[in-house]
Image 1 (tube, rainbow, N blue to C red):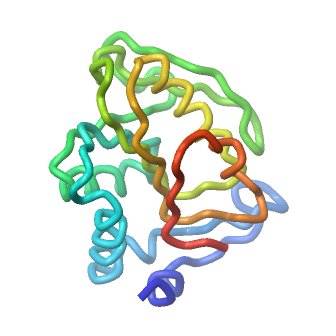
Image 2: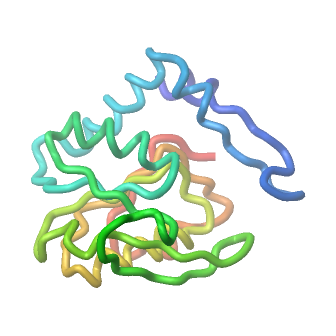
Length: 172
């Protein structure tokens, strides 16, 4: 089953810059059976656990997060790049593998004590998710777990998230 999903992910060399091999999940998303199987396998990790909100990271994380939130009967909270959210935001600046960035979340998106599942498509160096964890913790939420479709083990991103449970469906 996992091999079938992995076969739908293509490598794009030198994207977004030379030396980086981008894991393109769009073929997986375009195939209804593979997309359905992906969400089902992710959801199986959390069905029966108390999840108030699924927090997903821009942009491919939104796709997985929305479908997973629906499947878990949870709300969906979006973590976005600056200037994309219309109400008052909480923000964090962070370094990533090929530059710097800022993430924002609506200040009123999560109630203190909310049980949240963080979701993104790829765990690489862990910079973006580390920033997301720090951002969500400023809102005093409990992070149940952090889930990824893909983990690039050689980049050791999991080490930046050591204090939390991390699940990845596919590892490279």
